[in-house]
Amino acid sequence: MHLLISRLPVVLLGGLVGLISQLSWLIGHGWEEAGLRIPAGLVGGALVLWLLGEGLAWVLRRMGRDFWAGSARVGVFLERRGLWQGLATAWLALLLGFGVGLYVYATKSWPYPMVDQVEAWLEGEGQATLSEKLANDLDITPARHLVAAKYHPPAERRFQDLNGLPLRARRDAPRVFLAPAAPRALRAIYGAFDFKDKRYGVVLLGPEGKVRHVWKVSQEDVDWEHRDDANVFPHGFVVDRQGSIYVGYDNGSCLTKYDWCSRIVWRLRGHYHHAISLGDDNTLWVWGPTPGQADSSQCILQIDRATGKILQALPLAKLRAANPEIDIFGIRQMDRTTHSIWVHDGGGPWHPNDVEPLLRAKAAKFPQFKAGDLVASLRSINLVLVIDPVTAKVKWWRQGMTRRQHDPDWAPDGTISIFDNNTHRDWSRIVAVDPKTSERRVLLDGRLYGFYSHIQGKHQHLPGGGLLITSPQQGRVFEVDRQGKVVFELLNVYDDEDQLLNLSEAISLPLDYFRDTPKCP
View 1 (cartoon, one colour):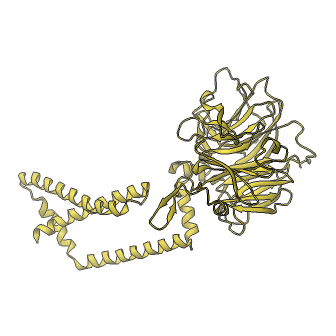
View 2 (spheres, helix red, strand yellow; view 1 turned 30 degrees about the vertical axis):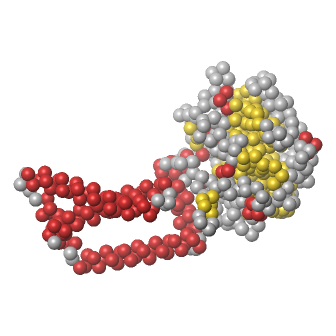
View 3 (cartoon, rainbow, N blue to C red; view 1 turned 45 degrees about the vertical axis):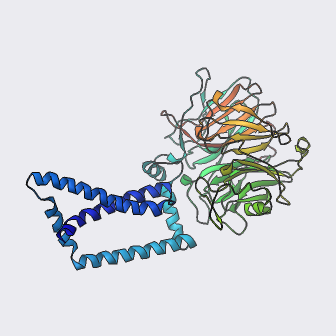
């Protein structure tokens, strides 16, 4: 009995240490191995600390001291009835709290919204450290929108400060390079600029590379529950000929139309994200919430630009159900005996991130499709597909030709061009796929331009055969001509320590694009 009492405290302590170490591992790597690791942690920790205790006791015994006598005194303390009653009460309270927690998470009942917000804050975005999150949320620095520069332009490329923006004093001015041969065009750029009164906006540059107009935007001034601007990401933007812009956000709570003077025209509640496309007949196309399900974000929506009315909705669930003969949506599943479960890590099972209609003006270049068909991207499964929005049938698809891609576009030459992030391979690229032959070719090799954005990203084909590229994780926009020469570049520099602010999207516009823009107060 004395032997058991003297060793028991060490064994219990070892089991507790082993349990904590395995729980820490499971939290970071997933709970699939919990049934093996938790018992192994308890037994292994107890065994290791007991053996260490025996070794220490042997050394102390040779010095005339009794290690186990001291441990036994702890054992006598452990024999107290009140101690075990207290531990039993605490254990029952822990089990009750765990059960309540499971119920709250499963049903999303109160106080789930508060827990979810705290969890989101602790996890953050962009793998920010706790100090960065605090600096961001206390508005010391816009830390969640800062990216580290891994790109330095050639020394011969002469940059100028972009002056005329109402920026906060804590940041440096963006820098612009404009070659003499650059096309004369307007360039609208959406992203984090850290203005004096807003974090986000759209900056319109004239053909000479100077600021011509600024729209300031926010998703904080809404009546419903939302995250503040410091904790969302600008992502999704278009501008129409009347000077109105339409903007969305990742982790945001609305899609908003602003007029030329940054006044709100209409606003839709929900998570509208990644990309917004102009369609024929005064419409928009965007991924957002299924009508009646404000918390969802996996529905293709057609929206009237004038009123904000939803004209058509195609949930991803309907798209999957309409195409059982091609099992391209079920790749991120783990199979059980009677059913499969979805893998939600890494952006969810599908991570839809773009949808764009085939405009009537381009339809002749794509004879196998018709005007109004939609090209879409599902990032998590490396899938680009063309959908008939009326029948929800998939008319064409290719998988694995890109890695975690964004922004498939109907290109002027009858191909589908794609922003291939090429995630975790240190360089991105723009590729084109011929939907008739499935032949792929590289339009722009990122290794030649120091170009890499592991997430996000946009591109645009230009009338002269060039490309306009937005590399968000470099805080960078650059334009190449038909020969691949860089003729325009903007770096959203934040400071002299190689930090830049994230940019979401750049759009090149003809000089006569805008019509009848109003005068602003």
